[in-house]
Image 1: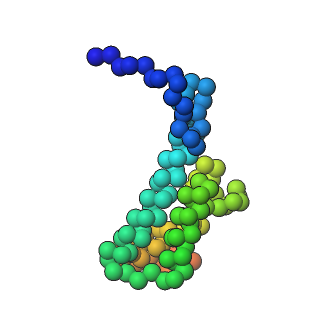
Image 2: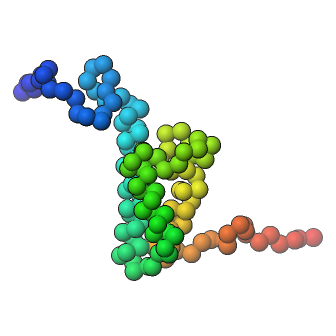
Image 3: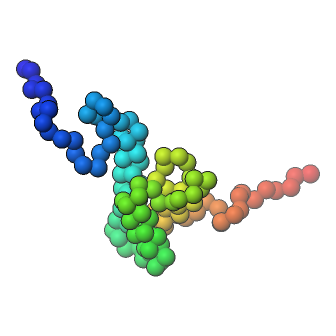
Length: 124
C-alpha cells in the first residue's frame, strides 16, 4: 500500500521551526519534549497534592503556577544560564523545590533534615 506524497501547496504549521526539508529539527524536538516534561511534572505535583488532600502553602501553589506559566510562555522558567543546564526547562533549584513539593504531596519524609547528612560517630 503506497502513501500519497505530501501536498506541496500545504504550508508548515505556524510556530514550528523546520529545516529545509519540511521537517522539524532535532533541536526543536528536544526543546519541545523538555518543555512538555516540565509542564507534566508541575501538573503531576499539583494533581498528587489535590488527590492526597495535602494543603500546599501559598508560596508552593504560586511557585507551581508561575513556573508553569513561564515554561509555557518562554520554554524555560529561568533566564540565567548559570542556574541550569542548556536546553533544560527548569533550573537546578526549581527541580529541587519541585521534588520537595512532590514528596510533600506523596506524604514522604525527607531522609535527612535540610543541610545535614547522616550523623557520623567518632570511633577511636
